[in-house]
Length: 104
Image (cartoon, rainbow, N blue to C red; front, side):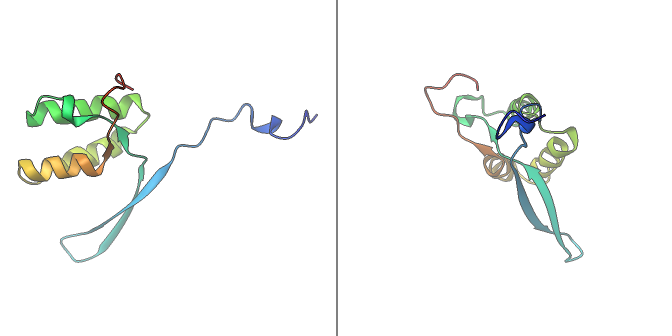
């Protein structure tokens, strides 16, 4: 029973955008991992403490449907270097929410 174009998709969940992340392993092997779309998070509004930043990322990622393995991968990468590396990793995995938007 067909009710017109698009009616079959009415009960399907929308697919989440994913992106491909490339990295080199210590052995020199190129690794590719499919990651969820970037987390919407305005890092400007957040306390600069490293643990607070990672906690904010984790909470926002969970609310936006990221799996725990993907969250852990980002957090592990955050912890693999210094504070600047942590910030670069978070910036790479987030998209800034506008200054006038409230916690989306």
